[in-house]
Length: 83
Image (tube, rainbow, N blue to C red; front, side, top):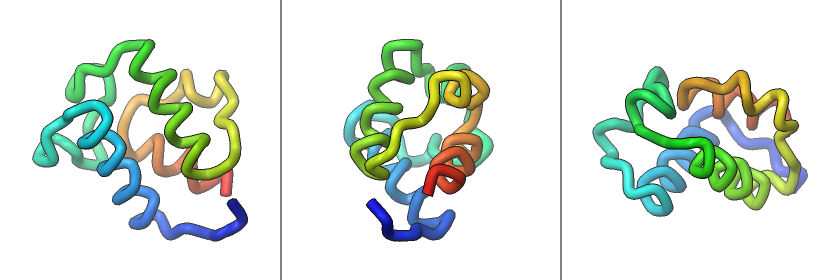
């Protein structure tokens, strides 16, 4: 996908994925929310999220980059760098 998304568009898409696919309440979806502590994702959820983001971007997030991701904002930044 060659389209350039704004940080806000990436954040909105990520919130949609987390709410729809992981059944996380919208109120919890803040940029500084920790994926594992605040949103209670586990390692399998993290892999599923990486797959969803790959479908969205058409690009794969390197596993070593994904390991460094802790917050929603970290995910947005990683996706933005991919695009």
